Amino acid sequence: MLTRIDHIGIACFDLDKTVEFYRATYGFEVFHSEINEEQGVREAMLKINETSDGGASYLQLLEPIREDSAVGKWMAKNGEGVHHIAFGTADVDTDSEAIRDKGVRVLYEQPRRGSMDSRITFLHPKDCHGVLTELVTAANPAAHKAAHKDEEDH
Ligand code: CMX
Ligand code: CO
Image (cartoon, rainbow, N blue to C red):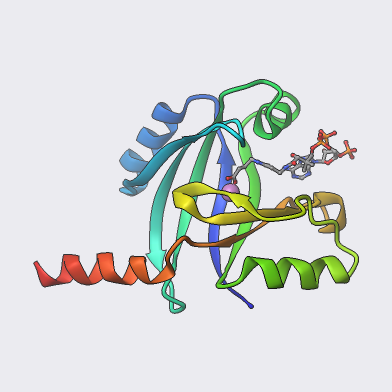
């Protein structure tokens, strides 16, 4: 079951400058950053809020590290902007197979590694009314709660 908006993926030319924009304008801080070689991106996750399913919602800022990556190719055509949305689920395998059975193209045979060791897959934008859609299972949904509790305890 899809239980939250996990993140909105935003393509940008300069990750550091874009992070600074979100910090200075809205006060959002970087929760996590990494390079995902397979996806061809440098990325920063800005946590917006925790969600009732034990997860959280983020903005995912993405800077391509290769022109031929999915984000690099998209930016060559569109410039900066919203690249995809991602729904969170406790079970990406079951949910993506159920969606595949409905005739929507799921881009990966098996989910792959996403941000913060999550498991991710994508649905083809042409089968989703023009929206590239990602499904995400967090590495350890309970970890969000544990981290938050720790903050409260101090
Ligand atoms: N949103 C909406 N439409 C999109 C799109 C997007 N992000 N990316 C491509 N499209 C559209 C294109 O506009 C094009 O439409 P037209 O034929 O009408 O022009 C069509 O889809 C095909 O696009 P393309 O430019 O030829 O690109 P490809 O088919 O080579 O790749 C896709 C498209 C979706 C298969 C590829 O981007 C992909 O595999 N994406 C999943 C991986 C990914 O996006 N990784 C980066 C994020 C990582 C993360 O979130 O962690
Ligand atoms: Co994403």
